[in-house]
Length: 253
Image (cartoon, rainbow, N blue to C red):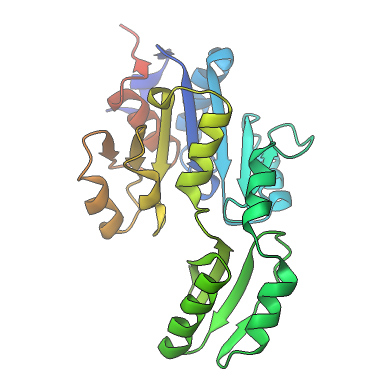
């Protein structure tokens, strides 16, 4: 598909587009960004954008503003444990309240971490998440068991680093709860994956995509689903291709 193929393309049905900002709208060729933004803005009444990230809400909002991205319906920050309205006026309820109720509290989590060998807390201002540094595989197994006792689970953060999250909270479940609470149709949702762990986005009744730069394991997992497209591009060009393949875009004659 050539770069100019999407010029004057139109959206043919309502869209809820869920993306991680790091390698999506904020990346890629300027002409593709312009074409994508043009489509989204022309059909603004039918589009809801969901911006997701491991980073803080403040960083996510600033990233979107600095890149002059379209205003989303919702920001899902702090590894999807903080859910904010797209206009920045507050949290989305009862979704945020339900996440808080699943979290045992920072004080309880930090107290247990102090009792463990080869595990140390990372400074983390997210209200319903705690980052940790784990030195050994043995310590990781002990941490898993302790997280389970606390009603939490682990999510990989980086090399030797993990996030302790409320049990049952991940990118897929937070997005799914938002869809249910907003009474949105699952067949209007397109969620595009790029990171290890994003497999939780698939198999939930909505359509999906996997960016070209994603790891092979995630691509292979995405290939198992008839409604997930493994893309050969990333950034805005990848989003445009996903919208076309999944039946949202009609190209100009």
